[in-house]
Image 1: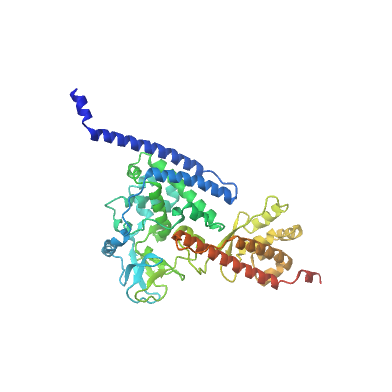
Image 2: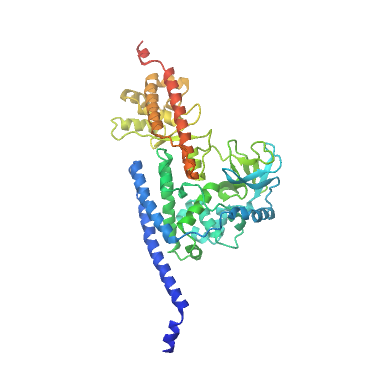
Amino acid sequence: MGRKSQSKQNPKKNAGKENNKFIQQKRKELAVLVDKVLRLTGIFQASNSVLKSWEHHLEIDALVKEILNLEGPQPKSGQNQRQSNIDKYVKWLNQNEVQLDGIEISEFKGYEMGLKAIKEFKEGSLILTVPTKVMMTEKNAKESELGNFITVDPLLQSMPNITLAMFLLLEKHNPESFWKPYIDILPEKYSTILYFTLEELAELKPSPVFESALKLYRSIARQYAYFYNKIHSLDIPVLKKLQDVFTFDSYRWAVSTVMTRQNNIQLADNDVTAFIPLWDMCNHEHGKITTDFNQELDRGQCFALRNFNPGEQIFIFYGARPNADLFLHNGFVYPNNQHDSLSLSLGVSSSDPLRETKLSLLTKLGLAGVTHFSLYQGDNPISAELLAFIRIFNMNQEELTKWSSQGLPGDLVSSEQSSAEAVGADIDRRAYTYLLTRCKLLAASYKEIADGEDDSLHRKHVKLLKKCEVQILQGAIKHLEETLNKLPAAEEKTK
């Protein structure tokens, strides 16, 4: 009787058992959902239908929402978490020989945090230096306790960016991490498409980025499911640490951090994916690459891409990247992007009676497997690959036979006068007319969306992206019309 009575009087023990049962039940439900995500994201989409891709995404999204609900809300540090950690971060940077004289971390409207000049910097002058020891790299990941997992996992071995994401997640929950001051200054969430609502994603249509966004989301959802299963099944000590902190929300945060901040540096003879503290707070501006890695001094160096006066934000150039890339991987759009382009999905129909001959000619130019071609911003909007495709696509049997008999039909990829004369006005007239019609149809499919006061940051980025894409199409239409007007009239050929 005494033992039975004692058992009844131990509510903490019973509560512990009930709590353990609840956790076990939750993990069983999660395991079922994770397996469904893994199967669904593994389905190969043979159809090029945007509608099918969207329907597929809706299924994935529904499962992810269930997973997020089961995993529960992630602990937040508060709105001012980053701001309150600046002093500790700067102290850590100074202790580790990061040169930051003349600059300070500041908030800028439309940019969140960035670097501000507090003294004058002339173009080409050294702004900051970051020694290798403060960088968080894939090399650090391999040398850490995560290395035991990396050596047996083919995905981590082949994708250094994912390795860095997993290492970041591990270090984020390590109170003794050397990089804690750096991690504590990182944003709590990002403006990448991994945080978009269904409504915000749908507003991307008819941009070609819409399908790219769905593919990216599907890829990250699949990675999450893959690692969840590994973490909860493999008997590797480091994975035990990840079991309670690896969630879809934490994984998309880690992946977004990598997408928006990663950089490749040359260590010894190898390219290494890395986070570069402080330097990665610089925002983007058009210009030239003014950062490099000094092997002799074992540090990253950033030079001024232009003159910066006291009080100005310091910018760097992220590279010649189109807005589609900046939007997908960095979560912003850059207006008046001189390196912007629009991807056109083009191909030879399986019902085209001249399909094989056209593909054979495209193969000679290395274009048989290409399904997306670029229209550029600026005076020369048609890429060489696109020019070759539209010429070959619009050839008749006689023309295809003639060009197929040549060794390497290089004139087809050139718009130079001599090449245009070799190709002939008839082919170019058909080719440019075909592309002009395609561009006009695409431009007409973009519906103008009025700005609203309640627009989210995501919606603002979507609208700006589509506005830039329409500008590219309008520029291409103008160029094509002018080019067609310069071609000799069709009837002049017989004179």
